[in-house]
Amino acid sequence: MKIFACGLGTETNSFCPIPTSADDFSNDLFEGFVPGKRAAFGVWAEKAEQGGHEFSRGSNMWAMPAGPVVEQDYLALRAKLLGEIEAVGCVDILLLYLHGAMMATQTADCEGEFLKMARDIVGSDTVIGVEIDPHANISRAYAEYADVVIAYKEWPHDDIADRAEELFDLCIAAAQGDIQPQIAIAEANILSFVDTKSGAGQEIIREFYDIERRPEILSASLTMGFAWSDTPALGTRTLIVSDGDADLAQREAQRLADTVRERRGEIAIGHDAVKIKEAIARAQAEASKENRFALCEGADAILCGGAGDATHLLEAMIDANLPDAVFAPLWDPVAIDLCTAAGEGTRLDLRIGGKASRVSGRPLDLTVTVRAIRPDYRHAVSPTFGFDGGTAVHVATDSGFDIILSSKRFPILAPTMFDDFGIDLETKRILGLKAFRMARVAFADVVGTFQTVLTQGAMSEDVRSLPYRNAPRNLWPLEAA
Image 1 (cartoon, rainbow, N blue to C red):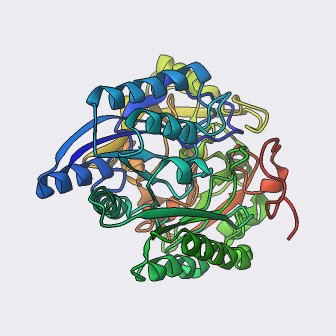
Image 2 (image 1 turned 30 degrees about the vertical axis):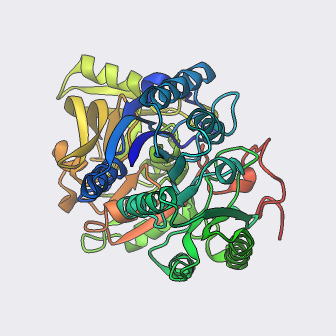
């Protein structure tokens, strides 16, 4: 078999004020995202070699989540990938690694449009297999133009390699004529965020694993959608790939969608988040050296498209005079320039945060000492994976409140960041993190209690407060059940 693979993706937050440009896309940006785990392209190359297939790959261009992609840049990226597909010539299998929630300023369904054009190039005889993120907003284009579509099942996403293997094997079987994949998609008509490692989310995803034990069901996926993408395809959906029986696929997809909808209250966005005042009170009452307490500002989480400069939580933490506290990271290139000019050890009046948009809060005026400056800072998540933070600076208030600032937007995904700036977490009781629920995984070894805090931001968990224009209005909780 002759196999070609390529990829394109970002998770677009329609409410983020920062546009995504071509410069933001890096080849293989998220390959190796999960420490110790293989990624899709590595899996496909290995399996092709083991099976004696001819494998080649093109670009795999991904960008950090932010606002919609500038249209002309999206068109250029799309043309690049389509050109690579055309240049490789006739192939038996085309493997695509996409996100599923990529939007451009004038294109709501980037992946669906790309799939159609890819199909036009390779023709009807080529098997197209697609691996997507479960936060994809999947349109009918996936069923129309692809042969096999599989989403990661788990959140956090520690099964990317497993799903890549599954996709590869099914595409080989389809190309050999051993199976006849039929794709069906059903809508649950809800917004959700499913943690598959515990509680209702874990129970729900087990049903998807269970149904795959039936020989006539090739794959079952739950796509939660990305609730902060204002698109007509928004919403939680189920996707079934059956072997030759389209009616069966549709029935089972709808049955699972109904099951998910019935448990919507348990997987609702923000179901365990609290307002700032309550979160601060909890931290004051429960935090200790034995129970380090993390306040997570998910509404401004950079990994989900937040600007990263909102001051709502930081201001409340400072006003509460929380002892033994640290906050990281706050995106502020202007403050970085001022700190760099002042130099390490300098005490100065500094205005930080609150610049990107109306939901960023007000700038904070603090007197701080510049403790450390790290040019070309890299936030290492593992020995082989990390994020470029540009120049990053550690400042401290006179009361000892530590803050890490950065000139580039990046998510905090490992407690090693604090070590990088000489901050000893053993001396800290309360952490303020620009992080969504990934913090529960990244900081599990050093934090005892996690509390998501409701604030304003591009990723507010109070979804009914967001200014949707294009999303379906029949989605719960935007419309009452």
